[in-house]
Image (cartoon, rainbow, N blue to C red):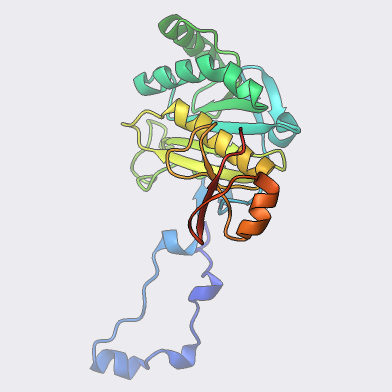
Length: 267
């Protein structure tokens, strides 16, 4: 593999570096830049791929994948719906088993909000099918959303679903383990929210549903939501809207401070 390219913002003109004499005389060391800082890539015997930088508001990377409900192209699968992509380190893991059972039970709630669920685990489809049987039995449910087969962690890498131990935290094949990530993606295919969990901490499915409600309410009503907000609770008038305009739009507005005004959009 060729040496990693220097990122443009790290290069320095040669004239600004101390001369060899000065470096030796005053023991000045030339700057060292570590590999992770220079390049976000993964190498395999067959390829080297750049890892995209994902930010809130950026377009979710598209991909093709095998799932328990057939082959998909991700953006086409999303269509005009919202989507939640959530990952798991491996099949038949205890915490993930409880999480998928909980998501399966909440699927009707996500359906009512126009949200499609799709899981990802780093095993093949045969393993997924056997695991789903276990999940259904343990949680007394019927898991009805697709799970992506990602045994080579291609999609996990594409979405940066690996932790800082990616060089040492590997399976028997030397591939980095996938961590628990959640991506909430809107119909425009933009990433609206991300959550990252360590292997030891199970996700809160009610919180995932709550933030979807918050995002959709904000989009539809032009408001923001305060701490611990749940549907039906008071919302915040954005600072960009004057109190006079807010009262025309929402009716009752409580002004705590000029920058903090509450109203309710569900009454």
